[in-house]
Each structure stands twice: as structure tokens, then as C-alpha cells.
Image 1 (cartoon, rainbow, N blue to C red):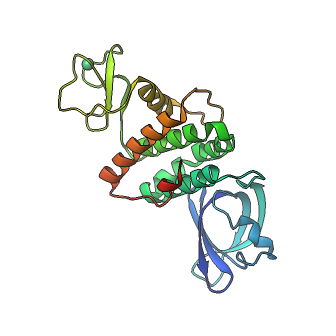
Image 2: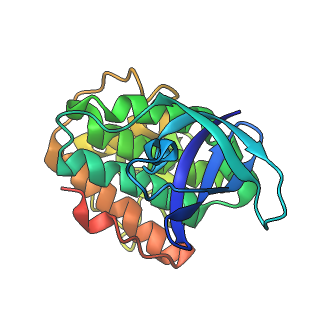
Length: 235
Ligand SMILES: [Zn+2]
């Protein structure tokens, strides 16, 4: 069974409880010796590792890991802080913002995002696209292709989470939020619209990506009441 590791919680001495995502559901299992570097299970002791695993039902609360072969590891020789914080962020929002059935829906997109994240220059775009996908999957709909009020595509002046998407100059009212510039709105639109975070080719400035990400995070705090430990690491 193919899985992606979402989190590992220490259990007893060198064992761990692993929460992982598969195409068919969330799988939680006990991995013996995962915290012993010499143990064969140690290789899956990393969030976002993709592995083919076999479990055996035992007397324990959780099924026990029998065999694991690593299919893909997020660790690479030049792992930098930005990349690692991106991995942590993706794992954290998947766990914190989605219901169990919604997590399962994310499997393919998560898998593609992990591949995209490895290309350093695209990292922030992948993080934005993944966040947008999580919001959509959790039931939030935003119109990023037309004015949310009149349906026109021209003269878009703001993106508002409160109003539910883009707003054009004719429909804009003074009390609406207006904090993104044109490039940032185009970036946000691309992030919402992509289905292929692995091979995306959308040019953007890092500063713009961070502004959009901050706006996403404010929405997450307001709507989910969740604060993310990994957010401050993304720079
Ligand atoms: Zn309008």
C-alpha cells in the first residue's frame, strides 16, 4: 500500500505512531524501532516520505508496520530551510485544516506538490497552490476568474476573502478590503487555478508570493481558528 507520512509521534522507547495518507484513507500504524537509526524502519521517520508498506494486525491498538520500501524521500542533498519549512507547512495544514475524508481527496495533489516543492525556484508557488487547494477541498469557494458580483472579467480591482473572490471597479465599495496589487492578484488566481503544481510555469516575485501567503494565513486564522507553527519559518 502506497502512503505519504504526515506525522510521527514517539511511542515507548524507540517506536513511533505514524499517521499517513493513502489513496483510500488515513492510515495510522505503529512502527517499531523507527527512532533507532540502525533500524530498517528508520527510513520512514520523516514527514512526507512516500513508501510502499505492509502492515500486520496485532494485539496492539494500531496495526504494526511489517515492511516498508521507500518510493520517494523529500530529503535531498541540498535541503535548505525554505524547503524544509515548506514540507512542514504542507504537512501541518493537511493535518490541521481538513477532515479525514477531505485529506484523502488531497492525495494526488499532495504527491504532485511534493515533486514541485523540490524545484526550489517554484517552492513558494507550490505552497500557495497547495493552500488554495486545501481551502477549496474544505468547502470554501472563491471566484478568481470573474467579478463575484457581476461576472465580468474586466477591470478587477481587488480580491476579497470576505466577498468570496474578485471584485470589479463597478462593484467595488469603499469598505471592501483592497490590499493586493495586480501581480499579487494574478499570482493568487494562478495558485487557485492550477491542477499541476509539479510542472507549473508561472513567473512571480518572491515578495509578492509572501504577501499572498500572508493573506491566506489571515484567512486561515479567521476561518479555522488555527495558528500554524510552521508558518513563521517560511521566508
Ligand atoms: Zn462587478
